[in-house]
Length: 412
Image 1 (cartoon, rainbow, N blue to C red):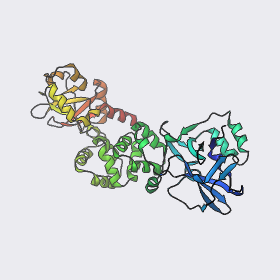
Image 2: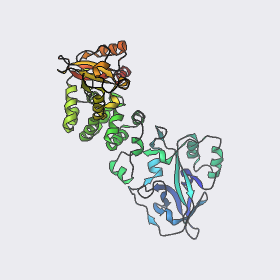
Image 3: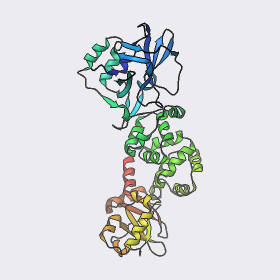
Image 4: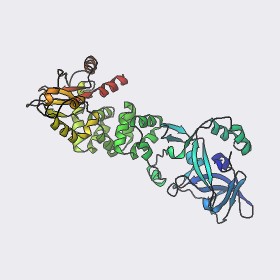
């Protein structure tokens, strides 16, 4: 193993010498100060008798497996500092998120790389999570360091590069002081992020949702098991929960809120903005287990005489709905739904074609009070992508998509 490569277990207990080669103490912990540098070991906490000393990285002239040599003897007692991320206290044996592997892992050791310059510094290279690092921990202080390195060689390493690690910190103030953000997490697919969140404890889940972008939080929450959705929303402050619920589609918001106590639901609704609030309240009035309880009120309805050119212009105005839109619904002059046009058909006609000409199949619809079993039966029988839910006058109340049916079947 190269002399410029260390494990944190190598550092623990390492002797520290002053300019005259006198023993000052032994390393008890080491810390980053992320606001200064995201990976460099900034402080070495050295046990000297009953007290600890704090040694800065720029007070060190040399680091080896034989010990640490100081270049400056102006030392100060260690005082707890919330801007420090201590490896022994805050990282070892803690759960962190591997954003590259999309999983939660437990840290068993940390790999460090020595950089040469005016001062010899150590940079965090990886966190170790496998059997190899467990062996090092077990043999620490029992077997000489160089022997441990030989003994571990037959075991394959299992580690994660530091830049792919996201630390979970429940205290919002300490998150700020340690410069911890959710940027890496927010770039993950919501389904992957949901899997990660489900592996965490309640406090860690709450910490992530409290500080995550509300749109990403909404997409992630939609992928989580309904019972856990309720636990997460109940743990958040009502205004934070309301921001997340506002970003969910109305049907998903209703499903999440329906799992909560009435008092909690009322507190969240009170904090919501007027426009999404009205849609959510409307859907909450429908009985659970019915088409009305499954439907989403967000749908695109156009007059049946609309030309293809005009329809495409209209779609641009509803860009926020396109991701979950499979069909356009057509209405006559009195607002009654008369047909549906799959989006794919829009590419098969010229701009002067009227939408009613593209609606060939008979319209299949359902009333809001029909049971879920009837919904799944219609999707199965007619291979539907979307099923309109209509009021007594034939106007569109909402739409149920194939995704809604798949989610329903998964929960059974």
